[in-house]
Length: 273
Image (cartoon, rainbow, N blue to C red; front, side, top):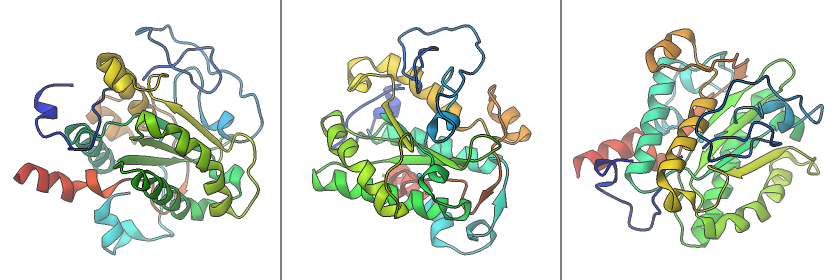
């Protein structure tokens, strides 16, 4: 992270950087090793849930853009279908991720929620993700902490509908969040929690890495962010130099988003200061 990127730090935030996985670790544990040879995807350990949604040999996670949330039109239709991330969507996600660092709220946690395994239909994923991030924000606010997040939805043969979420969660509040998240999923889905519906890990594999080793955190965050963009359309992959690509699958409604405090209005206001 450059000094310029942190020229206007958020008063109550922590600084950070990024993520990388042990090739053999279940559910994508991260490593301090910077270069790894290519390896086939690890066979999932279960026939449902996040084991199918995450390629353990690489990575895997992901929120809501105020522009599409506050205005009508085709992009905001609940029944709108898409199969890829577009150039515009990826540009907004990248801008949101960059702004999260600029205001001192770098993403520190990667969460994958397998909504299909939780009993949420494809058309209900956007509402479910919105509710989850709302509960996350309220939980952190009760402890005096701001939050930032962005998410991407994916689907596909053998993987099912799921959400990859990158979020800023201070190390001191990780236990609070992890202790509540299964209850949130029960409230959202109306079903009993099922094993492997949610997978949550610190970016970089270690709590506080964003302040303890910013360079390593930055590397791992870059990998995690690239992973959630793997459903990009060819034009977007070429524009942003994305090397890892996989079918993003059919999504109904919103495909991606970010919290308002790192959305385009917040970015514009921050630049005007």
